[in-house]
Each structure stands twice: as C-alpha cells, then as structure tokens.
View 1 (spheres, rainbow, N blue to C red):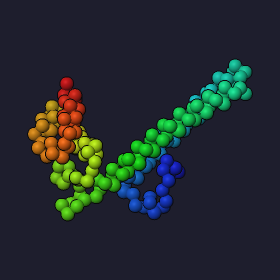
View 2: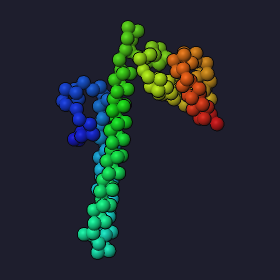
View 3: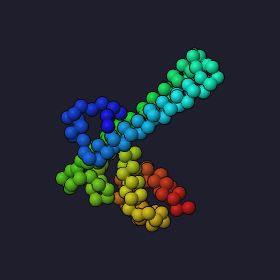
View 4: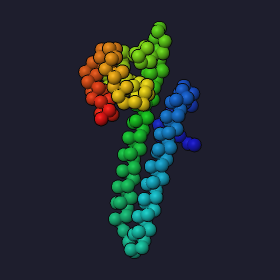
Length: 164
C-alpha cells in the first residue's frame, strides 16, 4: 500500500510505533476509500450526462470540480485527525521516573486540559462496559477532580448520558 496521506521520510516511519503505524494505515485506507467514492461519483455523473447528451457540457466540469473539492476537504479532515492522533500517541507513549504515563497510575500533567479529558474518558470507557458502574467509579475518583479541573463536570455529564 502506498502511503501518501501524510509526508514522512523513511527515518520518520522507522520512529513510529506499531500503534502509530496502524493509525497511519487506517487513515490511508480512509483516504483511498474517499478517492474511490469520488471517482465512482464522477463516473456516475459522466454516464448520466452522456445519457442526456450533455457529457461535454461545462456543467460536468464544474460538478466534478465541486466533487473534487468536497473530497479534498474530507481527506484534509482525515489527515488532521491522523496528525492529532500521532501527536497524542507520542505524548502518551512517553513517561517519567515513575514509568510510562497512564491514568490513573501515572497521569501526565504535561497534557492540555482537553487531552486530559480524552485520556480519562478513554480510561473509563475501557474499564467497564456497564454505564452505571462506570459513572459510580468516576464519581468516587478523587484524582479525576484535580486532574481534569473544569472538565470534570463535562465528563460526568457525558458518562451520565450513557446511564439513561
């Protein structure tokens, strides 16, 4: 598979972990799917306009440009999401003298508040599949109050939505 969703040199690819490589491959598959869907839409448009004897019309050109722009916008969103995931994964893979960063054993205070929110949310979503138990565990977590700050209530409300 040719990877062109992001530009990385060979040494950069060698520095990626297995998880990061999987993220890059998944993003590339999404991009390839978007491109294939765009090509199919343009082909469908061509045959539709051909059946109406308007295949050489400027309307087709403008519509194809619109489809290309829309696809590029979607690809850009996938690319930005991948870059954010790679940054977050590299921060999460680091550690300190207490070991690798991991909530709640060794929380990473260098993360931004929104990244801390994601770490704690992912932890509670993975710890159990029962929403009521998850919410109860979260309310008893005193570290989360200090670690999340103003995001504590936001996560509480999110977890409470799963209960009802």
